[in-house]
Image (cartoon, rainbow, N blue to C red; front, top):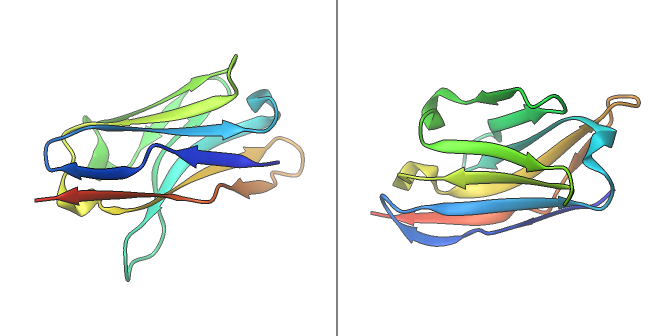
Length: 116
């Protein structure tokens, strides 16, 4: 399984970005998909995830600003990020958890930099 993350970049505070995570196979194979982030010197943390049934979960720090969604026809999960803050600066990683064995997969990460 390959997860191809894209969409990162440099944006000013208050701006928006949309991250994409394209899976190499149908995302119906995954019970859950999500985005994590890791800032320099910090642990990787969950940003948002979405189940195969469409239920979503967000970190408190991004509630109301970020939206996770999935397009089953494109095998892609998106993270729409708005009202970005400098503290959102991090490498963002896509994650998928398979139904079988609950095996976890990671994408390569995409860097988001928010300037003040």
